[in-house]
Amino acid sequence: MGKWVYNAVFTNPIGRWVTNLGFKKKRTSKTDLTRSFAFVDHFVTHNYLKIDGGQKNPMRLAHLTIPVDSIYGENTFGAVRISQKIWQEVWPHARTLELKGAGHLPIQEATADLAGIVFSQP
Image 1 (cartoon, rainbow, N blue to C red):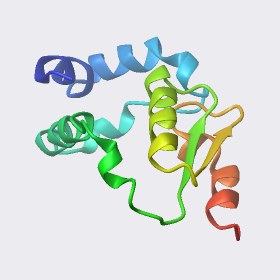
Image 2: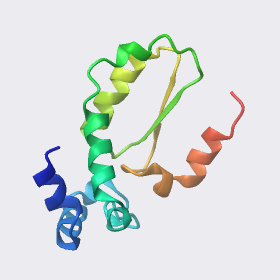
Image 3: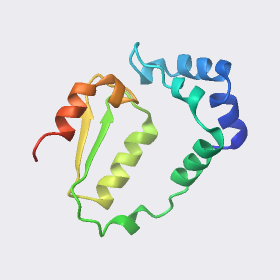
């Protein structure tokens, strides 16, 4: 995402409020998608997003045979669903799990369900 868009959306309280309101279907009523951006180093965060979004060849990680759980919320963004499919191709052995009722932040919205998955024995 461009720096201008990042700044408009994440660096100021009005942009964060509008964004959070606009994406209310991607979160539960108790979750604020943008609150944490009030407390981050925006230079670092923006550059992380650029690096993460710039990954052109995820298949370069296909040789990793580690156990992988890929977990997402039922009401997350379409881009996350697309990413799930890509990572399933990279790691066909991975478990892909959708958390019912959760939005984009299952760590906040479905904490107990997520912990049950992370700390369960495969």
